[in-house]
Image (cartoon, rainbow, N blue to C red; front, side, top):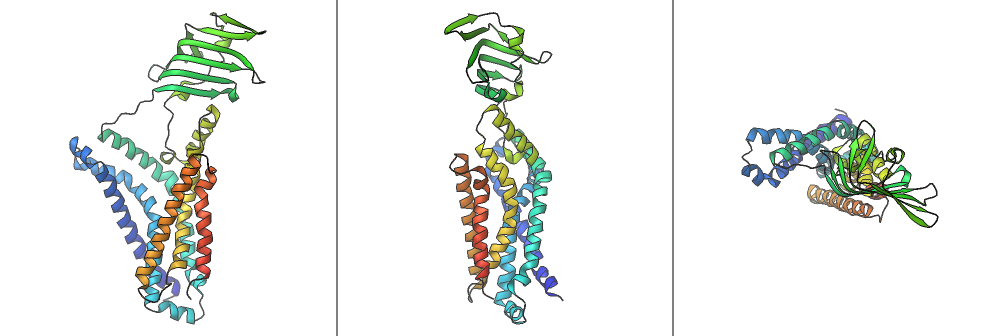
Length: 359
């Protein structure tokens, strides 16, 4: 039996058992979080099972890095404990050459899990959240209050007291229009505004337009159709525009962030979550690399010490990533550093641990 087959004969079963275990734990945690609500609304067991099946792809995505970490640490620890690696190293095979297949496997898994998350996890997770809201009798409204929208490259600013999505109406609307040099052009007020799909702009009710001309304020209640036609920001923009980037694929998330930029809303947090979509699959390769470097650092209790070191390092990574993501949310770090900073830092740590590993 070749070393490659022998290595994967030990690694693959540990990996799949860990995936199964962590997925079940995550499903149970999600179930027990809302168990009393399910009991309160007498949700049948069959519907709960359906909910768990919709959540299963997301749990596999979460469990993959932990499973790789555990499987690598367990496999190498057992081989260290049984002196198998001592024989392999004595025969002239280096640690890098022996564990290279694990690194290649984890790298391929990282790439594969990005597409798995983008094409399978996202749609099923979105269905799961919608189905869960139905079971918990939660309704989501698209109405919005105190809506402020910046459009037309910052030349037009809308401020509405309330937006009624069902009827596509705005109440208490102010529109500030500026010239190309950013000077004030006019201010339009309307007690209400109705979106006209046929005309493609907002029809102002009880409208007043204020213009500042030659140092004097001019008030006009006759708003021309030419002015109204410029108020063409679609009603979808005024909706309760909160989207969880984790619930959409990468292209939809990018379009959502571009919309936030266009209308002048904060986009640091969703942008950092967008970058995390690419950073999180890379964690699979990172934890494999880190586990190889941390395993076998003691001659006694090899398995226990190795697992403690690996799990402790993984916890430190996730805590650091939570901190950097929060800092990116509040603008203390750039979004890309919030998502990728911990990955780069722990990659350096992994290289150091790998170079100093016992061989």
